[in-house]
Image (cartoon, rainbow, N blue to C red):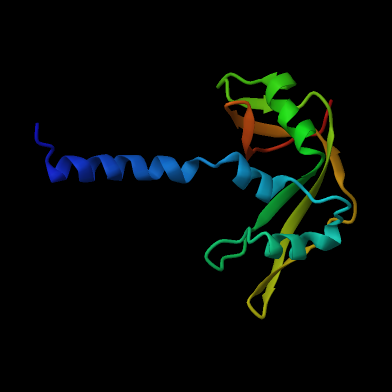
Length: 141
């Protein structure tokens, strides 16, 4: 059985965009699990050290969840499952630090300081029981 080159190319074109929307747990952890004792003043350093900005573009906003990996992963098991079956809203509030892009100086993206972490429910997209995407969050009711 021969597979035409055009068929292979078509499959690659179809599959390529799918991988750009997906993220691994390791990538999620790098982008969203805050280091111990992080404050808003650490936004620029943490984003730069973790190389969260891609292709020298400054990410407009990034959120760090101030909790252990186990506490964050538990949202995928115990959170309120949404209609899509992959999105979960935490039952409890988490401390989060939001880092907002401010200015680019000397090829470094500088971020505004969040003075204090905010306590909010977090929304995660999970695959195979692990968070892979941080979604919009809301205040607990």
